[in-house]
Length: 149
Image (cartoon, rainbow, N blue to C red):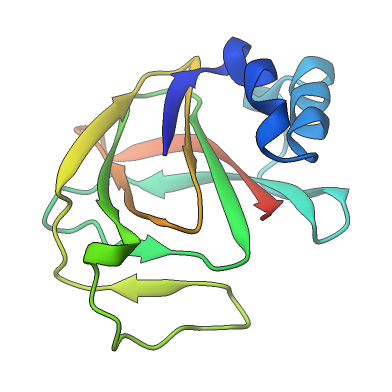
């Protein structure tokens, strides 16, 4: 997991070749003014989903992991907190949804929590369990980049 400002994403391009395309997309587009929905940048290997999510309490948030994609989650209008737990500390008997590339772990608290403000990002790799959308507000507008791992 990485927690940093969006302007520092350029320092992480060595971690995945598609990160350079994310940096370019952010430089060329105002994420807050993009239409809701998926915007494909490199077919299914790289896209951004602009969405408004319901704010949740830590108990309501659902821990999740992805095997094939990296999440770069960026809150656009409100603070967002994420629960975090390493994949190795999660149960291994939970079914994986291959079509959606997600395993959901209901009733699994995070071992730690981090908060992103607008202008920041959280990057979650396949080894990172994360529970998004924890917020004190009813809704959070956010950008979720999905990057092929």
